[in-house]
Length: 253
Length: 253
Image (cartoon, rainbow over all chains, first blue to last red; front, side, top):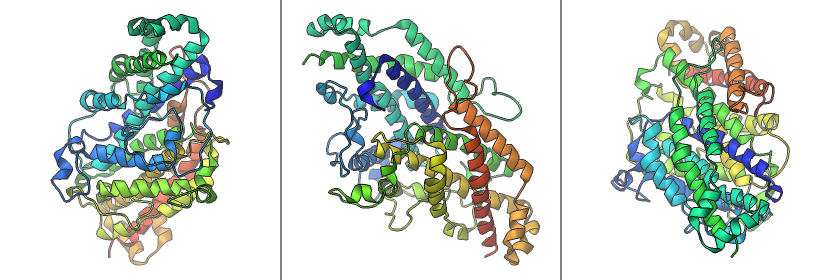
């Protein structure tokens, strides 16, 4: 997307579209059971190996390395989970629009997103069990993590658009480093309630068993719509606003 | 899934579920424009590089290498696009059910799937344009390719289940190496028509703009439902049956 022409409307449109990506990724992950060896410190290190630690860590770190070579992180909307030691891009540089204030680049809360995903979210929407597909499970987790990370760090763009629309509204709190006031300025409860309702509805639309004879399956969904609502209410929206606050605190640097 | 207890019903259930994965992956890919440098022979080789050839090839080959280390291809339902030079798995072996007749392992039509996807399918559902996100586009293509490959090679399981249910129906044509008769035995036009209708309906359900006020958006979808129908009718189902025929031809070896 052309980030040089961002408006509150285009940012809102992207956030809504990203809801679909997040819900698709959760439904895809939910096809596998929890497959806990994917996250275990000891699963790989007990065998002949070229790496140690959780398999998910290996799959995410190695995938990010190859996508970095392919130029993925030249786009300021993408944030790696393992930014240390990323190899440089080997493709011709693309001229991505410079919409954000440069200190934005230092904000990366993927460690929080990772911990929340593994320790809190997974067990809410994935069934117990083990089918042995740990590599595919990790690849599926990576798609979830990337979708969540993209949505949450999109807070940088949200904050920039809001700041440009009325800088005078934010400047006093920014100068005072007043996180609470900034958080209040960025919070619209009615909007958040509408988002939580919409994502639950999407989880119903996308997670139903579609058949030719009837519409929907009334109460049985691939991912519980109330979990998706809660994911947004408890984590995605608060973490997005956290990114917005961090961004605004650096906006006058 | 426990492939040791496969029935025609469980195979059918998996095929229906995989429709969702395929449609989700197409919708996700359609967020990007065509981004043709992703597929160009010359895009990378013009720069300082550690690889040459299309970026998609690099991303798929390297991702498959790391997923091979993580054990993905130990599952006989997964087929790499670049099976040559895959590194061995470094994780403890998982005991996947041995449901298929061993010569099945030699069947891999991913080259056809790759060519069809790049040269025929992509331009049917992706808009023209270039937003510079080639690495993310390639990652998104990989998800599509994997979903298509998994569905089409699932023909091995379909053929095995059908063969076990009535071996006497297939044995004469297998012994005569009579592809045409096998293809006829495996073709059920009414079922195929129902699949084409169902996937179009799913493309409508999953590709609509979901809002709180109204249901659906009457005619505007993220991926054209008729393209999804055609994808199934022209490519997925014929290629699946091709895999089924190839499998059956080896079934008495």
